[in-house]
Length: 224
Image (cartoon, rainbow, N blue to C red; front, side, top):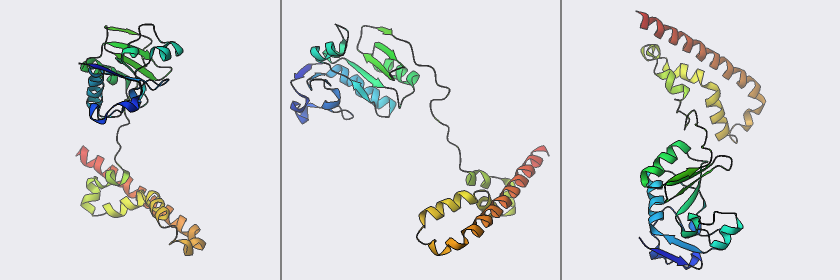
């Protein structure tokens, strides 16, 4: 794999850039705009992006020697040869990110949890810094909407009351959606909004009562 140098990232020909999820500006030196294209490193960066399936926020990639000195980088920093990247962890689980980075071939790892990024480079194999704390869950689990959960009740299905009870239990939610989308149309009803509010509350309470009955009935059937 070759390495090419450009005095400014704008000098990179369009047909010479083949890393679809990154731009020359992202990889260039933040202080000078200079760019060293390290194809082996960029191939691994693109492979990591493909494996994770979500954007990589590059905080720092290539650094010119003068900019590396200005930011207090190591004297032999891999950033100066375009073989290192500092990636923000804001949208990644650090544990999964590290595992994927190792799988695609990165060897050097620096952990900066207080600053919110991880350094990866082509080696030699080493690591430094305090690792990120393990998150309880990487992502929030999906929760089915209340209307879908209620509709699954055997009692609701058997009694043909799914639609009514669903509307009742989710009455407030439905009302908010409708009112938000039709504000102009309900202006004539403003004097009656207080009454409508109590109607929605009554419908919701009725739906909750039916829901409780359905749950109890399901439980009883499960005991038979």
